[in-house]
Length: 229
Image 1 (cartoon, helix red, strand yellow):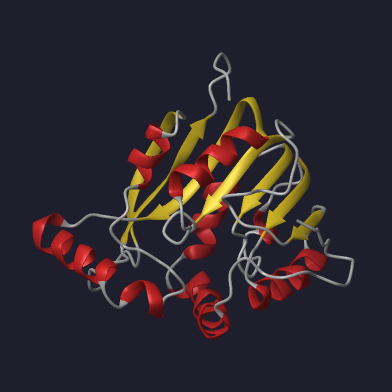
Image 2 (cartoon, one colour):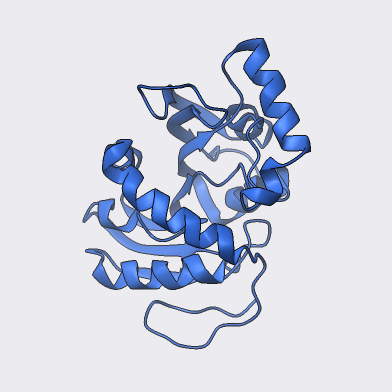
C-alpha cells in the first residue's frame, strides 16, 4: 500500500470512505477539546511517551499537539481521505515530526518491530476486524513495546448494554462511520496477547446525560517482551 507523508502530494485509493461522517466528526471533535475535556485526556494519554511511535486511526490529528518532545517520530495511519487531509495540516503544525500515511489498521503498511509505542484513540470501535488490527499492532511493536489507549465501549448496566447492542445491530454503524458502541476494548487487548497495565474508566462527558458512547477506558498495555509476535 503506497504511503504519503505530511510533506508530499499524491495518494492512492482509500481503505475507508465516510466523507459525510468525517466532516461531522472533524467539527464535533474540535469543540470536544474544551467542552468535553478531551484535550486533557489527550495529554494524559500521551504523557511520557518516547522514541518512535505509530498512531492508528489518527483522525484529524488532534493528538499531534500533545506529543512530548521525547518522541522522535510519529507515523500516523489514517484511512479516511477527508480526515487524513486535516491530519496532514495538523502534522505541519506539530512540535514533533509526524508523517501521515494512508492505510488500514488490519494491514499496517510498515515493517515489523519498528516502533517503541503505539497509540489507539477511539479506534477499536470502528475497525472492521478488531483481533486482526490488534495483531498488526503487536507485529509492528518491538518486544516490550507500549500501547497507549483511549477507547469507548460497553458499560452502564443491563439496560444500557441492551441499548448499545441494539444500536450496533441497526443504525449506529452506518450513521457513525462504522463505529460500534458495545465492544469491549479491555477484553480485546487481553485476548490479543497484550499485558495490561494500569487503566481507568472515564465517562465522557463527565457530567450530563449518560450516552451509549459515554463509557471509556484510558490506559496502558505492553507487547510481552518474552513471547513470539
